[in-house]
Image 1 (cartoon, rainbow, N blue to C red):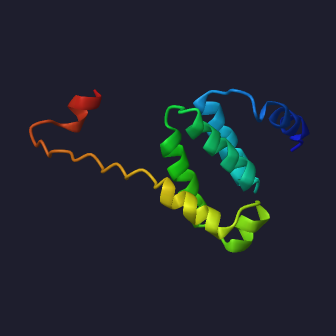
Image 2: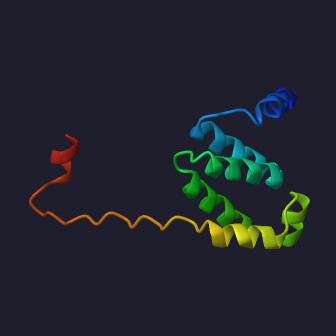
Length: 114
């Protein structure tokens, strides 16, 4: 898979305004490809710009970093201390509890789905 064109686009648009969804995808891509320091920059810019969902994104990002080894963090340009500090400053969002469904014996599944 040749992604050299993608890399060029990333380099040219990295510090440009982008939607929250685009920024989240780029953070995910950079994290998956080991460029943690660049991904962190995007996370922090989103917070600085008060983008919608930035704190949630930061919490998820730093939570993910805490699961990496020191070697993986260092290879990505971050230290364990940076990951832990970010995790403390931006805790992950609380998990959403599973919906509780009431058991209604009067309603048949076939009636719901036709």
